[in-house]
Image (tube, rainbow, N blue to C red; front, side):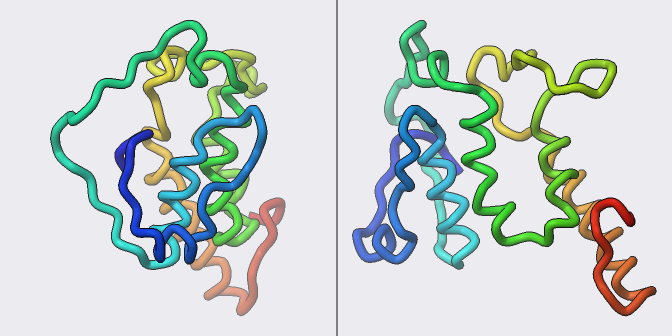
Length: 147
């Protein structure tokens, strides 16, 4: 989608609903871009850097909750997709320990504040295909636990 700097037509911004106001949680820009895309708006990026964004110890990326930030940017997708795929989406996005529990801290690029959701799209597509196949065979939707 781009990042923290964008131009949006006022009419589109109002139709999308603007930014949500979750105090102390970042990624409002990504949430708005997702809402725009899901509502059929065209989202383009400029394929070159036109400004510098630096991460400091006091940056929002460093001072807000990693999991809440990412959950916020997933909200439009979770609201628009069947509940049966929510677990797959969340498992694809949030880092896990070897025992399967949520990691208390991000790893790799995410620890630097530079990672979004690499690889999540393939996992979501696969789960949606499985869900659609289950609906085709049984004539109705299956719950997450049944899949």
